[in-house]
Length: 266
Length: 251
Ligand SMILES: Nc1ncnc2c1ncn2[C@@H]1O[C@H](COP(=O)(O)OP(=O)(O)OP(=O)(O)O)[C@@H](O)[C@H]1O
Ligand SMILES: [Mg+2]
Image (cartoon, rainbow over all chains, first blue to last red; front, top):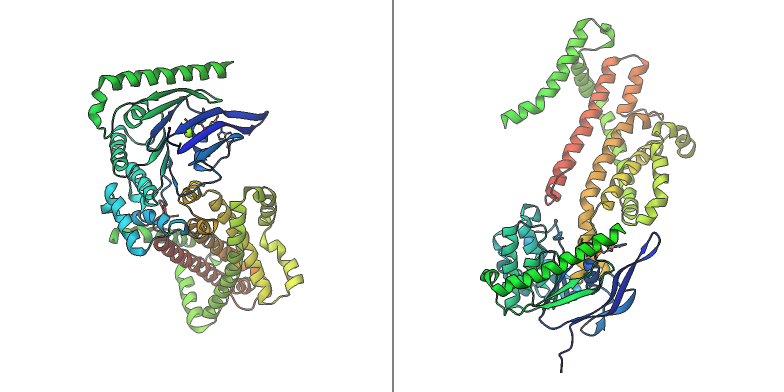
């Protein structure tokens, strides 16, 4: 018997109110994400990826169909689903440590002082931020801010990690480092992950499965299994199968970009 | 450090220099420009032998009361306007209408409704500081990125927790800026407010002096207002720097 899905899209469609009536952005998507999977969503810009994630995060409700987490329809955001935004969203008025502590002071996940201390220290260490415990975010680089955002999300022990182009604003080296750091963190604390990315390389390197989306209104174009076992490291990039998968995903995405261009010229 | 001090003092010396130059140039009737040392001497005389301390005290008190009342109202009103876009659409024109009215034009009405006592003067200052503060406040609040609220929600924050732990800290810098602006505007409006039958106050001092054509006293009054406003501004800035040192840029 198939294990129950952790995240499921069931005939999900979503429309935004446009100037000339409703605009369909997500068109009848059905998909299931299983426990511990790392699923990357890739597709042309503006197709509706963020919209899909926002429905899982609980910021948007589908127009029809349903989005379920552990079998329950999502009605709003919650600490079981950690969200990492491209623009980090670290709280500028709190120090690094207080940022991580923030979630632990909320009634939803309140912990005793000693335990909070221990959790903060653990994730500062995991994300290489221990030396900056008392620094304000304005002192941190982009990569450090994103590490802080990840540490803060981890602190409340979410079961899911939803990431919307989390490394999009980082330079190539920092980005590669962040990918390895995240894979390591997932190795110690397994989570079910949904990652939106524009980088085919990143999708193949990190995910267990890649979902390629079509141009708007978005549907699933293709689902690609990435069979490499975890833990993975940079040597994977040399693997011939890695290259094959990368070309395949890339050509699928390029085709959708071409379709999008045709649509908009019509 | 010494260089810094020199840089700060230099522009003031330049102004005094120009002042002397004008006074001695003969371009302007000598009687119309009291020389800086004459004004300084008059300042000392008024300070030690006359009522200048009382004037300063009365004016400062009025400004304080007016600004305190104005900001107390401007903070919640500005917050609501900044936070709820829909409300702003309707209220914004109203605020700009009232803000555009010069306080001096309101004096006759204020006298009718509030008489000629202390309250009337404070009402004028309240009016000026409220409208200045409310605009700074709501424009600041409207610029707060919604991402912080979203992040807090994903961490499990309730509405109350979001207000206390996210919105309030983000509001503090704007409150301080609003306070600064309101104080500046209040000092700028002081003379107008003291047009209402004031016996004491820097504005009253200036007006009395003008009826007797005592230009040096007028200069003393103006310079006092400028320096007190400057001192208060510096104090708030220093306070802001300490309280919200986390800000990327300090206003
Ligand atoms: N609140 C909204 N109201 C109306 N239209 C919206 C809204 N949010 C998004 N859209 C539209 O929906 C479409 C999909 O947006 P979405 O942000 O999900 O795209 P995306 O795939 O994440 O794009 P990108 O890769 O550039 O981030 C876009 O055309 C966008 O203009
Ligand atoms: Mg997006």
